[in-house]
Image 1 (cartoon, one colour):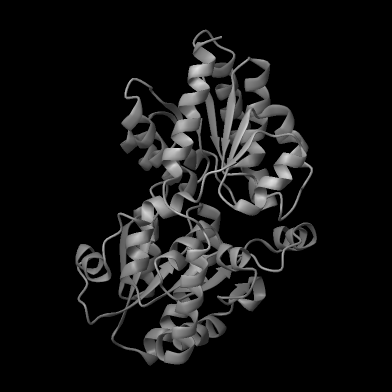
Image 2 (cartoon, one colour):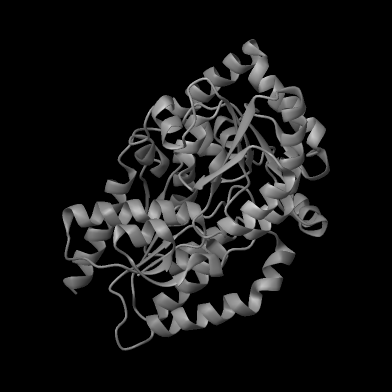
Length: 378
């Protein structure tokens, strides 16, 4: 059984299922995810879009639905046909509770992609030590923290590097989206959660209007995550009368096709940086959630590109600072200031070199098979 709660987890989960199948085609998966897991052969019993929400108060609004689905998954773990192994991908507030239920049911747990304890709530390290059998982490600096708590931890590299290997070149990506080599393209990447769209997309579209006023030839590319309604997004874009092309959620391909991108903070910032597309980061949520988050999160930066680098490679525009004019000024600089653009590209390339080698999904697949073999031998 595999459980993801967001688009990035679904992406990595799909790659993992394929990797396991390449070694042991008789292993079957079922669980929670979206299009990538389903395409990989996982039998979905729940769409992960039912679980996703951003911000403390947004989660409270979805709580009855989330609790109902948690109870249904709990019944599966304690039922007559439980899984041989539970694989949990990120999504810690939900998944750690599910891990505790698996432990009660005697089902081994592999946690893939660690909760961001280094940002906030370090107490979760102790919870993980209690309810998780093994953990696969994607940043090397996480390993010693888990080792100090006695967790069986392995650094497996970053799954995005696996996905990056199959991404075509810039011209091929543009052909895929029916764009020409000479088009001036800016990406608008508003996230994969409905709440992210609600708080960020209007500002991004206003920014696009300002950019278009100075660059009439500019076009925009907006990838739609598989758990989102394309019709709803299309309605918002059409109302703005902007030359925006909505495409399926192949974010790597969309990012590579762009000259620059405006990206909501999250995995998409790292994906965009890895393909070498200059970017600016936006993050807006409800004022109450932002105020609480500011008190809880102790990091200097919010985007993964900057966190991994330990320095500000890309500009971050948070909450009230994310005004359309400020964003348009930064995007204009990324497009037209060649020195600024080259410097960012060089620093993005350095970040990429520090992330290790591809092969993450295969490494985690071996962990899955080792745990299944051990379970079968009991």
